[in-house]
Image 1 (tube, rainbow, N blue to C red):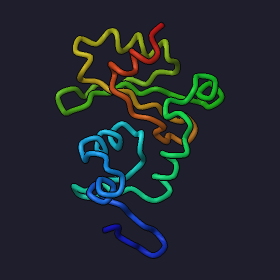
Image 2 (cartoon, rainbow, N blue to C red):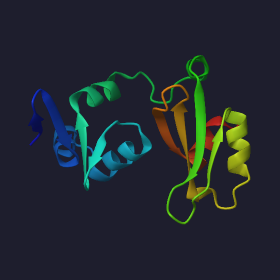
Image 3 (cartoon, one colour):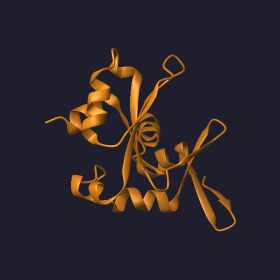
Image 4 (tube, rainbow, N blue to C red):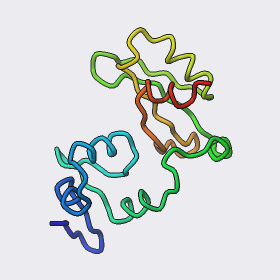
Length: 136
């Protein structure tokens, strides 16, 4: 059952699973990857109605290259767990690909695609998926 806080309605993973018929594991993956926007409070993920609308109204979750170039974007390559504390900021896709290709174990890294002006995370993507998407 969704939680109401004033005019804000928050949906948990369980709520979304029941409403949408999507597995809880898939929903958690979408949240971690940034495909669905939500916040984690304690151990529980919560998603607003607005975030659900954004997800369904977005024509293509993988924004087109020209759109990304209009924004001031930066790419942050970082380890996905405590074993890898490396973090490198890149300005271009090519620079990011080079950085990822220099890593010994690619599965230990992810890329935050951020708005350079606001530092807002636009997308969080596994390193292997980033390479697959942007390699020619």
